[in-house]
Image: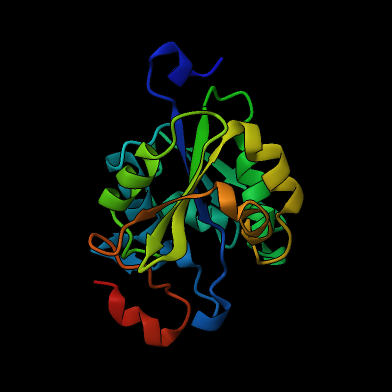
Length: 203
């Protein structure tokens, strides 16, 4: 029985995917890009917490030792994905595996390279998940984006389809009728930090 059926709020863990090596950024790991004076991964962890997620699990990959040394990830469950170069799918699988036995009813997935997505969007998407079967995503002008929330009942199937750099796209496409879309364009911007030309977004 999930917490919502007992009259309690479901426990929604934050799952931050922060393993990317920044190939198009000249090999600068995205987690360590500076934003507001601190590593970008710290900013993303704070967004998850301020949006009401807990516990927070972080998946590292590229330069993981440097990230652990330079970023304050205290209070987070940190997992290293040794296969991060295979793409986002492997990091999503690692993150969902780390949540096994955590007691979470759902996982809200955020990407480290989207600093325009703030706590308000996280809170909205989190509120749309009422059970361990929940499936919701932020939308921007009607287009599905991040964060995405998966109820725990869905984790095994999500992991089974998470391959390459497509993450959960195949799963979401196959279950699009079940997705609750939560419009967030009034509170967040869903740009990615992928290339040197995108760095102007960082402060």
